[in-house]
Image (cartoon, rainbow, N blue to C red; front, side, top):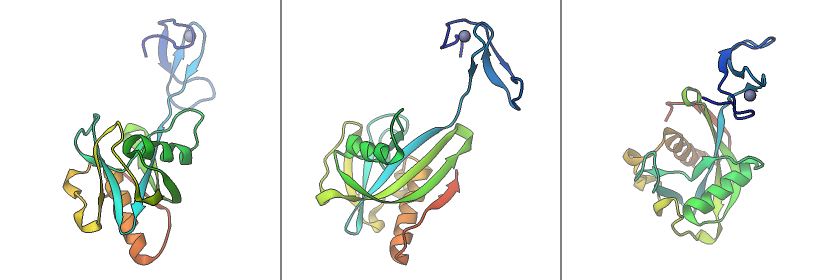
Length: 178
Ligand SMILES: [Zn+2]
């Protein structure tokens, strides 16, 4: 941060404000403390019969690799709505959320993934604008070596485990758990 987003001043310093316990970016002109906090990534694994829908990314990072539809939550948006929106943007598909399956922490890059399992409505999908292609995979066909993110691998594996166990539960982990 070179300029204060609040007043435009260049007098930004890193210091521990009174009553706080860690360094923050503070504007010397208007005294605004600019807190920086983790971002939420919301996503949903669409399920149809014994298959899951994955998308091959048309955007960086990890262009060309497969992913569970996911993306940054927008301001004013709930996690559920964000997950549904991401499936629409990446796979032009509608989902009915079934349960929250993953809480996946990436502390080193300040991201928290929250991913649902959802039923793919009528099994219909196309290719969203952020994808090169979208495809339904059985567990045996998942391209494990071409996955974009560990969070996706984590969620897909837990989904098939839950399915075998007949359970629907929240799985929690931190990077680099697969
Ligand atoms: Zn300022």
